[in-house]
Image (cartoon, rainbow, N blue to C red; front, side, top):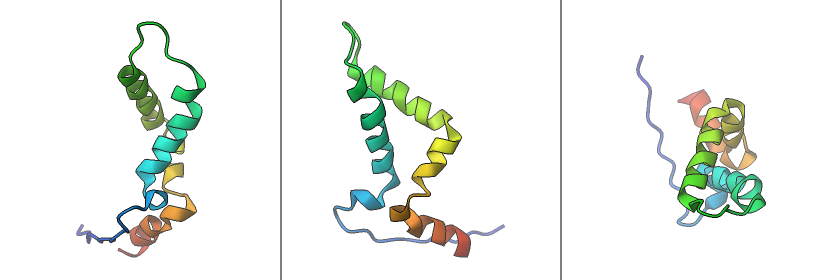
Length: 80
């Protein structure tokens, strides 16, 4: 099976068009900000853990790619 690669040129600053930013926003809204670090806890470890939780929740992960602002990704998958 051959698939075509589709290139989308985004503006230099377009966080609303980037699914990665939706993940960051979710982690900030639901994770790190909601619970202060405990004594001796490292921020890096907390963030790694929260990203692992997002990665393991397949339905949540798919939701980032279903946001209206990233519809260009779905359109490509349907037509490419």
